[in-house]
Structure formats: C-alpha cells, structure tokens
Image (cartoon, rainbow, N blue to C red):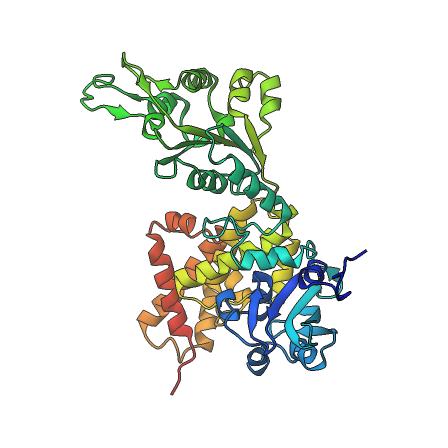
Amino acid sequence: MTKRNKKSGKRTIDEIIGELPSTLFVTDPNGNILISNDFTALTIGVQLEDLLKANVQDLVKAGYYGHSITMEAIQSKQKVSKNIITSRGFHIFSTAIPILDKDGEVQLVVTTSNEFKQEHTYYEANVPVTQQINKQLGEAAAGKGKGIVAESLAMKQIIKVCNQIASYDSKVLIYGESGTGKEVIAKYIHLKSEKWKGPFIAINCAAIAPAGFEYELFGYEKGVFEGQAEVKTGMIEIANDGVLFLDEIADLPLEMQAKLLRVLENQEVRRVGGITNIPINCRVISATSRDLWSMVKKGLFREDLYYRINVIPIHIPPLRNRKLDLVGLISSFIASFNQMYGKKYVLSAEEFDKMLSQPWHGNARELRNYIERLVVTEYMGISQQEEDNVADWYSIDHFIEKNKHQLSTLKDFTAVAEGRYIKKVLKDCYGNGTEAAKKLSVDRSVIYRKLKKMEEVLAPKTL
C-alpha cells in the first residue's frame, strides 16, 4: 500500500512519480519541458537537446502531434489519458498526471506512456520515473559522456559494478557476444580508475598471427633479426601504468598463455633476445565471446591462466535482450551520423518498429553499420527497385530518361552513375563505409563526397 504524508494524508511527489511508468516528459505549469528522453525525441523526430528547450504547445503548433494532453491536464488539474499519433507515425497511448502543491495549483506535469503502437507493450517501459529524472539531472548517469548507453537495468548494474571495482587493480574478464561493447566497458573502467592518465593498450588476439604474438606482446632487443638495429618495445611494456586490454583472449596460443601467466604472476616482462626483466605495473582486462571454461575442459585454454584473469567476471547481455539500450543506441547513432555527414535523417515509426524486432546478432556494431547506411543513403531521388538494380544499365537509361532535365551534362551523369554504384557497394557491405571504401580502393571520405554530389544533382531545382 502506498505511503502517504502523515500530516496531510497526501502522497508526496516522489511517491507519486516513483509509481509511474516510462516518462515521456516532465513539464512546468506552463508546459515548458524540463525532462525528457531519447525515446520521446525519436517519436517526434527531433534531437533530445532541442526537445528540452521546447514547450509542448510549440510542438503542437509545429505539427509534431495534434493535441497536447499535458496542457489539458494543466487546465483541468486532472489526469488525462489519450492515444497520441505523432508526425512520424508513432501511436502512443499516453497519460498526463498533474502534481499539485498544497494550494491545489499545478507544480509539475508528468506525461508517461507504457504502450507503443497500442498493440504491444513498450518492453521495459516500467523503469521508475525517478531513475529517469535522476539520469537527466546528472545524478545517476554514470556512463554519460563515456560512450556508454546504459538505459536497461542490466547495463545500469554493469556500470555500478564497474564504478565499484575501478579503483582496484583486480583483473577483469568481460564476456559477451561480438559487438556488445566489451572494449567500451574496458575503456570505461580505465577512465574511472586511478590509472586514467596512463595508456589504454588494446590487443585483438584474434588478429595476430601465432608466430607474431611473442614479438607483439614482449618486444625484442637489437640483433634478434638479421639487420635489425632497433629495439622494439612490446605492448605489455607500453601499457605500463595503464591498462592492457586483451580482446578475444581465447585465441591466444597455448605457448603464449604460459608466458602471459608468468608475466601476470611476476609483474615483469623480458623482451625477446633480452637478459633483463623489466618491471611492469599495468591492469589487465581480458574479453572473450567464447566459453572459456569449456575450452579449459577441452585442454584448449590453461586452467591456471583462466583463474588468474577471471577475478572479476562481467557478462554483457546481447542487445536483443536490452531493448531500452537499443532505443538509446539508435538515437545516439542517428545523432552522430547526422552530424558526421551533415544529414537530417529522421527515423520513421515503421523503421523504428523494424529495428526493435530485429535480433541484432552483431549487436551494437551491426546496429551502428545499419544506421550509418540509413543516414548515408537516405534520399528521395531513387526508388527501392531502381536501387536494387543499380548495376543494370537499362535501369539507369530509364532513370536518365525520366530525369533528363537534371542530367544535362556528362559531369552530372557521371556523378549519378558513381553515386548509385557506391550505394550498391555500401548495401553489399551492410552500410559499413570503411569496408566499402576498401572494396572501391578509395578513401572513406570520397564515398560520402560523391554521394553528396549525387544528391545535389538529383535535388529538385528551385527557380
């Protein structure tokens, strides 16, 4: 049963807010938005920072949605619940609850929703409003500004653990599927630790040839190779007074596992060909997407090394199990790519619903590539069918015939032909601009410059 103020018999603001479902926004008595979130910004197609400067009446006048239940609640001083349809096609059943002061005047209005598109629940929407308010006020956003989206309970717990262990040098083993952000968590621990001024050295154990591991990790002295006159400092030595991040440690060869164990036990390293042990003081954080204990039982990973690196285990759930983080990442990636490429891409309700239903086996990395492709390739000049047949020159002829007034010069034709082919390659690469640039043997910046040029050619001409 809800507690009430003993003197007045009324519930306090904290008690009322704490019971409410997912917040859309909190406003003052005049409708000025004080607090909001990424989900709300996505549903109406604006940046969160712009939303926090707005008044709900201005949003209605601008056509983002047709009616403000917040203003209705302010005027009636009663709870108001209605289905709201935004300009982006989102159907959201919302409730505006006015919070009154002791004189019966509106102090705040909390507008909430626990349903998206009415027919299905908005997943983890019952996160207490007070948590979200604290987040906006900067009291609980531990991951803010550190590249971490921590909206789900699972990620909030991970951030809490990271904050607790950051000041110690205990070794950490981060588990998680590829693309879940294991390196992001490792960097967060580094930044929160006393070693934050030291280097963060990341080694992808899956990307180093077995024969090169020892030279990469330990370095070597002069004369190890014929004609070699320089000393090479190893990555472990470079990480001194900082963090050594061993990503995909399951791919470390058995021989190197024994040598790494010796380094961890003795806190010193010896270069290949050297006779002197060099003291080191670095924190070791490891990560893997595989079941290390199964590998131990099969003799593929040393048991003693397993226990040495697995002092504090952290498991990052896949993105498909963290729908609130998915919403935050979508918003963050769209804003980032819009800024990077000078775009104004706005997510539609249909596309948003599609993203929520995807399994995202590549997790945040796959989502990032997908959104990059959406932002880069989104324009109104070419139909989906034409885009799928971009290599078909008859299709291009047909397209040129329809747009002859815009392709009057060879330069314009070349811009469109190049741009369309680049879009096809980007699509084949699932929106990964770096991979597409490699396939085309050009710099990544060339891709987006040529796409922008194509858009300029195809843009409607004003008189």
